[in-house]
Amino acid sequence: MMLELPEAVKRAHDVQCVRKLLISSAPAREATKRAIMAQFRNSRLYEMYGSTEAGWVTVLRPDEQFHKLGSIGRELAGTGPVRLLDDAGIDVADGEVGELHSRTPGRSSRRCAPTASSSSTCVTNKAAPTPPTRGRARPARRVCAA
Image 1 (spheres, helix red, strand yellow):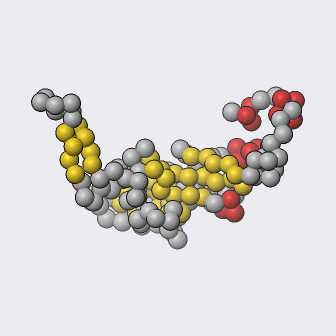
Image 2 (image 1 turned 90 degrees about the vertical axis):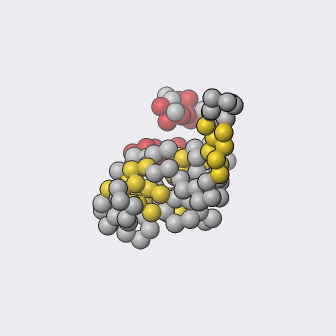
């Protein structure tokens, strides 16, 4: 990562024209965010959460970076509601651990699997939810990774 380069190397590169930065996969640590913002002073930092199957589901905007540490943000426009459910499929209370469920326009409504008679068989899934991941419920539609 660029942050690990020696200071002399970092100073040799003009990054003043970089306006937006994106972190995805997992919430970044506060120290990492602060180092990024120190290196890219003219930038706005976004964090996005999603999956290969669903694409991006939530976004943590620049103004929320240090107020919502550990958060994966709010639902993106165009996604269905993001919910955290228990093993019985019921919404969990604030602060409880559950599985994240979402629907996105980018989610395929077909899934394919190899069969003995052909290279693959595709099945239509009309209400294709995003496969669940573990998370912890937070109030005000904020979802935080466990």
